[in-house]
Length: 185
Ligand SMILES: [Zn+2]
Ligand SMILES: [Zn+2]
Image (cartoon, rainbow, N blue to C red):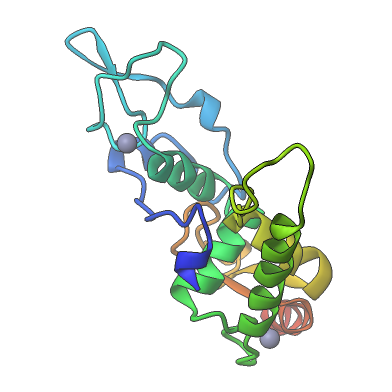
């Protein structure tokens, strides 16, 4: 399934220099606050500090992997992070009830592929429009199928809010029940 999603990233966790800048109990942080990283006056990737020198002054990341890793790390509630966690870390299944979202993901991919194959007068190549992004998968599952992101250790019990270490993708109903149980403990 991974190969059928165009922008599947390799998640790179935050460097200690980066995570050290933030209060990890926050639910979301602004990446724009992250200072640019320079070596000998040349700017390198703000996320991995390795990629570079970067060509344009507005460029912050060396690759799509770094850009998406930074986005998921800073906002684990995002559609991108939800889909990534579900597919990459959980084999497409809710960790609480075991419900498998794979057939729903495949159905979404098939719909996209079918739409891309429909002849359009402006696109001579029938195949060139097939773009199935992880973000779209996450959006689809969240809005149509009630997929939510849960903090394994609740933030009020000192669980980490940002990053992907303390999150799991779960069904809305499972999330509701867990939140209720957590509040009673
Ligand atoms: Zn990088
Ligand atoms: Zn569930």
